[in-house]
Structures are given as structure tokens and as C-alpha cells.
Image 1 (tube, chains in turn purple, orange):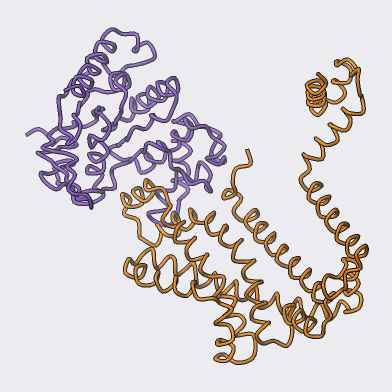
Image 2 (image 1 turned 180 degrees about the vertical axis):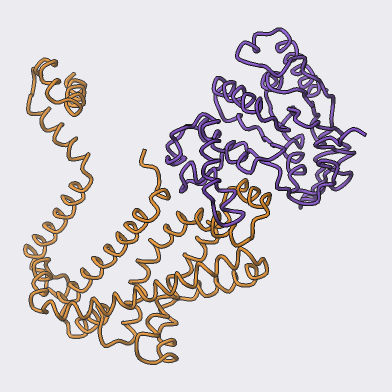
Length: 258
Length: 294
């Protein structure tokens, strides 16, 4: 028997009951993410992409259907999942290193020497060697988000959830950050669910792109990216990336017009 | 035609004075105008100096007007007459009054912090408490403290206790509200991070919410510390044997108006010093919580 997929959505729905009435965020969502796959989720604003992530993280229970992680239905927060938010949301009073070790201090109340060594290693990996003693305030937006990524990787999670992590950055920084991210996973593969608004970003980084429709969010289609994992700045010039990006753009715009 | 020339010259002069003198041709019309403009500009860059000049000007105007129009001292004493009382009263007596007021103000302020912050935390954690206590707090805040003060004095009797309670009553409301607001203003992502780590709830409070509330708490502390002086004085007006408020009351009842004004001056100085002390504590302990100066 094949091992269960890392993540599986099965006819999953989410309905929020607000004061103004019921809001259906997601309807009948079904997809799978394989172990160590990089899945990009692309869709219009308000299609429930972030809701998807929160359900994988166990922060939100689906109102219908189920979400499974490694074959087990998600019932609450799991420790083998790291989250990177849209904004870095670092602690302004803590140094970069303390921010990276924060999950440990927050969970157990103490940080071991091994944790600090691991933080140092992660900071080197995200390209922030020598910045450990700085305050977040002294860093650029891109560097702050690198700290956010290091923080999410501290506990060495199997699954990394990224909610439009580079959307606040300028276009160039954004590409560099994305490619650096892939480099990190080259030695130590992770299962990544990456939410984005950018068709180019999705085509450049992902193994597979899940396209969603707006309100209520449903899966429109899944498109594999016809490229291997070795990607760099030159990948952007490949016709396959541009073709896929324009195809994705057509899908999104076509849906909006409909 | 002259004004742009003045601006250009003086702006470059403020940056690199020596270079500017050489590279710019000497202004043909009025060289001293440039000097005045530059001096004014420099004065503008020293906010302390501008404040000092304004203050000195006001005091001088006051002194001259009182003397010129021979205003009787019970209506408005001259600044010199007010300052004169400091010598007459003697430093030891001033010290007694100042210490009495300071003690009540600081103890009331401290008690207020001890009550307000845990109360805000409790209201944050327990929804029912928030819904039931909040209206009660508003009622307490809406009741004029000056009106309750005599009642509290009668109930709690002599000594510092009633005065401290009055000070606490007047200072704690802004603290509770600001702390509660700060605790709720934490970035939701960090709360999700905390939940995803399944961290204990008290650590969400101590490591995330409370530190994020620090700027809010200090804004309220700055308001509360000046209210604390008011609270102490209100209490002394009702019943006291010492204190600057008591001193002012006694002085007015004896028609010694310059003395009363002297007391007022001391109170203002106390408030200012305490306010600056709060700012200093924030700067020393929580430098990251200060607004960015850039």
C-alpha cells in the first residue's frame, strides 16, 4: 500500500457564521499534497486560501468533510507544522536570535544551547549570518521575513505553511527570496503549501499549482509545473514558465469575468 | 528677489558653514539679514531654547504688568513676590509638604498599577468579567472623585489610607482601559503561532500580550502620574495635616496669596518631574516601545 499523502482534503467545507449571516468560505475542496512536494495555491482574494492553511495547521476545524495530515484527521494544532505569515510579525523587543528561538521559549519556557546553535544554523541558511544580535527594527522587510522563515523552521517541521510570505516585498527581492527558499529545501526537503497571488511566483517555485475560484472557494484545477527542482534566475526566462504563468493568468482572469 | 537668496544661503550655511561661505558669493543686499535668518533657524532647531524664551517672556510680562498697574497681591502676586515666599517658608517646611504629597501620589499610583494591570489581564482572559466589570468601572470613573473624597475620608478615617484610595480611584481607570486595549491589540498571527505551538495560556499573556501592551501602558502611566498628583491634592483639600495641597488651602484661608501661588508652582514642578520620570523609566527599561524618531 502506498504511504498516505502528507495532506489530504476530502470534500472539505468551511462556513463562518457572522452576525450578518452565514459566509461560505470553502465548498467541497478536495486535493492532496505529496510528501516533500511544493504546492502553490493560487486564487483571487477572499477565496479562502488562508482558511485552508489554518485548517491544515489545526487552528480551525472544517464545518464539513475532513482534513488529514499523514493519514490522520486533524483535530487540533500539530507540532510538526511551521507557519510563515504574510507579515513577519516578529517580537520588536527581542533580538533576531531570540525571535528565532521564540517558539521553543514560548512552548517550554526555556531555550537550550542546542536551540541557540540551531537558530544560528538557520540564520546562516536564510542568509542572515552576523545579524543574530540585531533588533528586527534594524532589518529590511525582506530580512525580517527571512527571520520569520527561520523561526518557522526552528522545530524542524515536516510541513511548512506559507501564507503569501513575500507579497509585501518588492518584485526583485521576492524572486531572490523564493529561489533561496528552494535552495534551502534542496538538502532538507519539506512539504510546502505556499499561498500566493502571483502567477509567476507560483510557476517559478512550485511542483504543482492549485488554482482556486472565488467565494465560496473551490478547486478549479490542478496544474503540474513541467520543470525539475533545479531552478535559478535563468528559470524565469524559460518558455515553460512564461507559458504556465500566462495560462494561470488566463484561468484567474477568465474566472473573474465569468 | 531677496528672500530666495536668503533661504538658499542659510540652508547651505546650516549644513556646511565653512564651505558655504567660500562657494557662495557674498549677498549683495543685506548680509546681516542672513545672519538673523540663520540665528532664527538655529534657535528653531533647539526646542528647549524656544520654550525657555517663551517662558521667560511670559514671566517678564507678568512681573512688569503687575508692577505697572499696581495689581494687589491677593488678586495676582508678582513672580518676584511668589519666589520670595520660598525663602520665608524655609526649605524644611517645603520638604515636609512635598514629601507628604509625593508619598500619597506615588503610593496611590503604585496601588493603581497593582490593581489595574492584573484586572485588565483578568478581563482579557475571562469574557464574563469583562462584560460585568466594565460597566462598573465606567460608573466609578463617571462619579466625580472630588465628590466622593469627603465620604471616603469619613469612612476610612485619618491617615494616609483614605488619601491613597482617592488617588488610586482617580488614576486607575485610564490604566485599565489602556492595558486592556494593548492586550487586545497584539498581532493575531502571534496568537495563532502560540496556539499552533499549544503553549500554555499564561505564556501567551507574559511573552506576547503583555509586552505588546507596554507602549499602551506607558501612554496611560503618563496620564495617570499627573492625575495622581491631582488625586493627592484633592484628598489634602478634604483632610490633611501636611502636603502641598494642604499648604495651599491654609495659605489662601490666611489670605497669603503669594504663598498659595508658590505651592502651585511646587505642584506643577512635581507633576512635571514625575511625568519625566515615567518617560525615563520607559526609555531605560523598554527602549523598543518608544515611537521611532526617524
